[in-house]
Image (cartoon, rainbow, N blue to C red):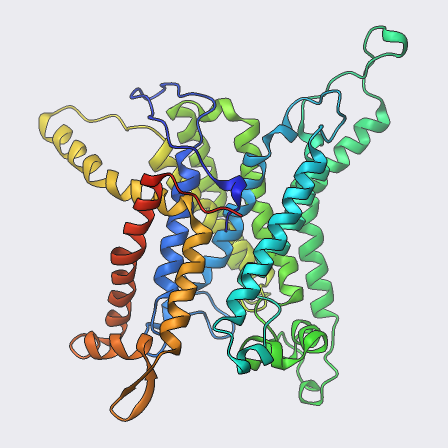
Length: 461
C-alpha cells in the first residue's frame, strides 16, 4: 500500500529506438503499473464469495500457498520499493547538512505521520460498521496495521543506513586547507551500515524468528505433545493470546495472521522492495534507455526465479505458510514479486521490441500494441490511488455483507445471495464467484480509477 511518497507524475513517452534515451527525471511507469496489478489482484481476490469461491482464490488454511496469499507480500514489496524512490536525496552526495541531510527531521515526521494514519485507517476498517459485537472484539492488528508498522521500520532502516550507499566525499581539512581522506573508522562504520542495509536486516529478522519459534515450547496442556510447527501451538499463538486474548484475534482464533511475530518476517518482503528501489535510484542512468531497462529487468527476473527455487527448497524444512509468515513463504513471495516487477518493468519501460521484417508482422505487432495500451493505462490509473481502492473495496464488501437477505428460508446477505442466485444458478459456482469479482472490477473500480486520473485527483496519506 502506498503513501504520498509513492505517487507518480504523469508518465512521459519513451523514445522509439531500442537504445533511445528518456529523461532522467522520468518516473518509471512500471512503478505505478505494478502497483495497479496488485490492486487488480486485491480487488479480484477480495471480491470472491467465500461460500462458492475456488479454493485457490482463498487463503490457504494452514500451510501452503494460493493466489490469495500473494496480495499482502506484493503490497509490502512495492511499498518498500517506493521508499528510496520517494526519498532519493538520501542517496546523493552529502552536503553541509551532515550525513542525514538537512531534511532528515522533516522526513521522520512524514514517516511517523503516514504510519499513524495507515494504522488508524486499518483500525477504522476493523471497527466498521461499528456494531456492538464488532467493537467488543475489535482487532488491534490487520493488513493496514501491518503495513504501517513495516513501513515505519523499513523507512527508519533506510534513513539510518542510506548514507553508506552515497558517493564518498573527502572530509574538509581544518583551517580551510585541502580535503583529507575519510578515516579508517568512518570506512568501517560505513561498511557495517551498508552490510546491515543490504543483508544484515533480513538475516537478523529470519534468524530471530527461527530461533524464537523452534526453541519455544508452548505451556498449554493441549500442546504438550506437539513438537512440530503448528499454528495453534506456535509462539505466534502464545504471544497474540497473551497480548490481547483470543477475543481480539481474527475470527477468535488462538493466533492472528497479522500478529506480532509474523510481522518480523513480513518486514523482509518490504526490505526486498527497498533493495530494488535503491538499485533504481543509484543506477538511474541504466534505466534511461530501453536496452538498459531490459538488462535490469532480466536480472530481476533471474534473481526472483532463484529466490522462488530457494524458498521451495527451504519449504522442505520450514513449511510455507502465510498465517505464520514463515521464512520459506517470505522467500518464495519475494521471488514471485521480483519476477513480477521485472516483467512489468520489461513490458512498460523496456521500450518497443524490434519488429521482424514483413508487412504482416508489423501489422500484427501494431495491433497488439494498440490493444494493450488501454490495459496499461488502466493499470497505471489503479496504481495511482491504491489505498483509496483498498479502503473502498473493503467498505463496499463489508456493507453489502451486513445487509440481510433471505434465500430459500435461510439467512444470508446481499453480498452472498446475489451471486448465488444471479450467477451460480446457471454456471459452476467457482466460475460464478470469479465473474462476480470481475464485474465489480470492470463496472465500478476501473471507471472510477480512470475518472480520478483524468481529473488529476490522487488520494494520499
